[in-house]
Amino acid sequence: MSLLTVGSVAFDAIETPFGKTDKIVGGAATYIALSASYFTQKNRMVAVVGGDFPQAMIETFHNHNINTEGLEIVKEGKTFFWSGRYHADMNSRDTLDTQLNVFEHFDPTIPESYQDTHYLMLGNMIPALQAKTLSLLTNRPKFVMLDTMNLWIDIALDDLKDIISKVDCVTINDEEARMLTGEYSLRKAARKVMEMGPSTLIIKKGEHGALLFKDDRIFFCPALPLEDVFDPTGAGDTFAGGFIGYLAKTDDLSFENMKRAIIYGSAMASFCVEKFGTERILNLTETEIDNRVMEFVQLASFEIN
Amino acid sequence: MSLLTVGSVAFDAIETPFGKTDKIVGGAATYIALSASYFTQKNRMVAVVGGDFPQAMIETFHNHNINTEGLEIVKEGKTFFWSGRYHADMNSRDTLDTQLNVFEHFDPTIPESYQDTHYLMLGNMIPALQAKTLSLLTNRPKFVMLDTMNLWIDIALDDLKDIISKVDCVTINDEEARMLTGEYSLRKAARKVMEMGPSTLIIKKGEHGALLFKDDRIFFCPALPLEDVFDPTGAGDTFAGGFIGYLAKTDDLSFENMKRAIIYGSAMASFCVEKFGTERILNLTETEIDNRVMEFVQLASFEIN
Image (tube, rainbow over all chains, first blue to last red; front, side, top):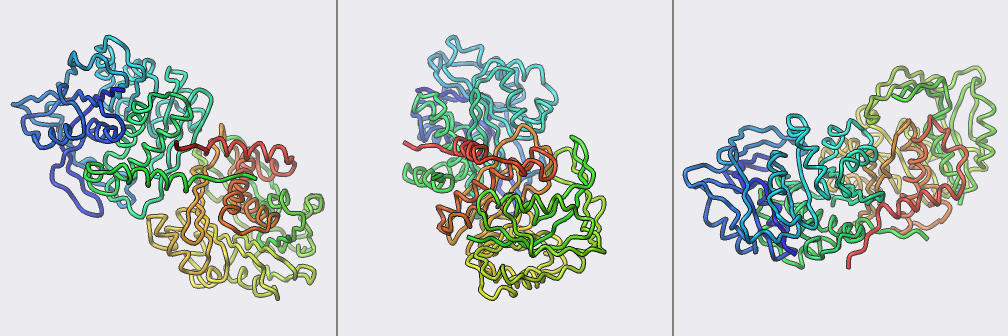
C-alpha cells in the first residue's frame, strides 16, 4: 500500500559525547520515509527544502523508492536548520540553534498523483498544518497516524486536539502523554488521549521501550539494551516510520499485526541510534533487519508452564 | 526447597499522595519472606526485632509457613523504624526519620535447624553482615542471591564487592548498577557486575520493568502498567521474594525457568504497590496470582510471521 509522509526535511548539526557532525540531512520526514522504505515500496513525501538542499540526498530518496514530487524546493530559500547537544545520559539535550528558514512558511500541497494514498504519516509539525494536509486528501486514507511534541501542547493545544480527534493513531512520548492529559499513570493518560478520538496510541519511553494501546488492549514493546547509544536523533521518527511502513506493507490493522509493526519499528530505531543521523538506516539489508527482530523475540519471549 | 531470608524486619510510617500510615510492619525480610511464601512452603527468617514487635505479625509469619526460629527478639530494645514521604511521581521519596534501634547491633546467627538451607536471600543490609550470614552456613546453599542499595556502594564498597564475588545472583536497580560500575549503558554495567562473580544479575527499572542477565543471555521483563501506584514501599523486595521463592519451589536454575521466576516476581510486586505496606500481599490466592501472570503474558507476547 502507498504511504505518504508529511513533515520536516532539515539540516541538523549534532553533538554527542561521542563526537559532532557538520550539517547533515535530518528532519522527521527524512527519518520516517527512509525507515518505512524498508517495508513498503510506494513512498511519497510532502515537505519543503531550500536551494541549498543537496541533490545527492534527493537521489538517495529515489533509491529508497521515495517519490519526491511533493518535496517543494524553494530555490532562493534555505533549508530548516537545527543544532543540538546531547547530555552524557543521552536522554536530554539542549537546542543550540533553530533556523526555521523555508519551513516557517511551509504550506503543504498534495500532488494529484498522491491522492490515492492509503497510509498517511503526519510527522511532528504545527498541528494546523497536519490538519490541512489531511483535509487536502480527497479520499481519507485508510490509516492516519500523527506524531507531535511538547511545544504544540504548550502553544497550540486546541489545534492539536482538533487534529488528534481526526486521526487513527497517535505516537507521543511518556512525558508528552502526561502533559497532554494531566495524568501521571500512563494507563489513565492513554485512556484520556484515546477519548479524544484515536483508537490506537503509542507511548514511547525511549530506552525503556514503548506501550501500544488499541481499544482496550495493551502491548509492551521492549527496547533493545544497547552497548552504546551513539546519537538518538531521529530515533522516534525512525520508530514511527518502521511501524507505519510495516502496516502499509502488510495492510493488516489487527492488534496482533500492530504488535509486529511496533517490534519492527523498535528494531529500526535500534539501528538509527548506532551512528550519527541517518547514516545507519541508509544501507540496511533485509537480513540485518530480520536478525535484529529476532533479538527482540529472544529478549522478550518466555513461557509459563 | 527451603529458603532462608536474612534482612530487616521493621516498622515503617509511610506518606504517599494517597494517604499516610501509622507504624506498620515492613522491612526487606518481611516483604521477601511473605512474597516467597506463596511459592515455597519451607521459609526461614534471620532477623532482629524489639520487644515492641507485635505477636500478631509473628503469627502472620507462621500462617505463611515462615519459620521464625531465627527471628531474634530483643525484649528491652525497639524495632528498626523508618519513615518516608513519596513525591507525586512515586519514583522518588524523602526519608523523614530512621531509627536503627536493635538493627544497629544485629549480629546474625543461624539456628541449627536452618543449616540445610538450599536457597539463601541476603536482603539489603550492611554487606559485612550479608557475608557473615553466608559464612555461618556450613553447607553453602545451592543458590545465593543478594540485594543491596546505593548507601553501601558509597560507604562500604570493598565489603560489597567481596560479598558480590561470593553470590550467584545480584539484584540492584538501574541507578545502582551505573553507580557501582561507572557505566551508563546497562549492558556494559551488567557485564562489569558479572565480572565481579555472579552468573545472574537482575537490574530493576521500577515502572519500566527489569532486565535479567544470565551468562551471555538477556531477558526483558515488563512491568504491568497500573492504573495507580498506591505505595511503592517494599515492591523491590516483594519482586525478589517472588523470584527466589519461585526458584526454590521449582528448583530449576535454567534461564527459561528464571524468566518465569522474574515474571512471577513482577506479578507479586504489582500487587504490593496496590495498597499500603504488606496489606495486599497478606491474603492473595493462587488464582489471583495466576491471573496476574496471565496479564504479563498478554502484555508481552507477540508472534513474528
